[in-house]
Amino acid sequence: TQLLEQSPQFLSIQEGENLTVYCNSSSVFSSLQWYRQEPGEGPVLLVTVVTGGEVKKLKRLTFQFGDARKDSSLHITAAQPGDTGLYLCAGGGADGLTFGKGTHLIIQP
Amino acid sequence: KAGVTQTPRYLIKTRGQQVTLSCSPISGHRSVSWYQQTPGQGLQFLFEYFSETQRNKGNFPGRFSGRQFSNSRSEMNVSTLELGDSALYLCASSLTGAGVYEQYFGPGTRLTVT
Image (cartoon, rainbow over all chains, first blue to last red; front, top):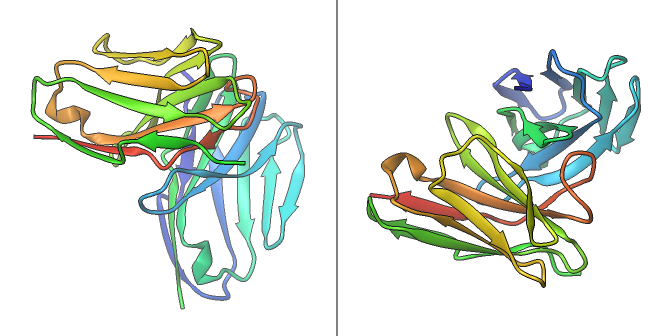
């Protein structure tokens, strides 16, 4: 069974600060996706990374896929209250997507 | 293009009853996956349908079943409901399948079993 561990589980910071959340596994994934979920809604896809070492930037969000395709990180610069939500990583394989349990992020104004 | 829709959005059932949830994927998407989300276990994969055939299945008991119609719409059924089945049930669609390809989620159906 492939497992994805996300850390930290909870993070509360002030507006304007930077943060990094992590997604780690002992398994290799063909792709890795990050989603953000807000209360009462389904997860929304933020990015997909497929190549080891790949870095993608989405405005203030920077996503990195580990060289061995087992881990990933999400860095947010100058966090804003609108970044609040549950951040989920998901690893892709032959049997579908495996999700981590997520990082609950709260950005306080 | 309309997103993934799920009905109903909220449902309250009693133990022992059965329930059917519905999902309409994004137009042109042929794969539909179902997930159960709970605070303790997170998002867990139930099954995936592609062109009316179940292609992948997660580790859930046989009380959980699904099907997909020729128009790609999908239904999920849970029989003999248990208290532990209370969860947010999410449906996601993608062009050709789960795994490598990006999935687009619906808003979910919140099921409460009393």
